[in-house]
Length: 113
Image (cartoon, rainbow, N blue to C red; front, side):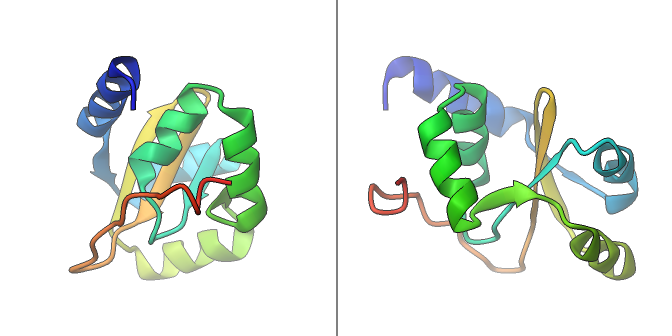
């Protein structure tokens, strides 16, 4: 990771926060939410979106690691009100459901493409 990427990663990490589904609903209504799989590094996903790394993001979209939040998932979150973690990479809000006692593995080269 370059110094620039490390700095961006740290910046995004510092801007990541817990958020409620109620607060995210307007972004969902505008189609501006990207769901990040629970076992995926939210910050690395946000960094790739911020850097406009189209190849990497397209591969992750194809594998389902990130994607638009579907209506059934939104309904589930409304019903359960889970702990969510989010970061803004305009025009997107990347969101991930936080699981208790879950560690997020670093994405290795195998998962990147």
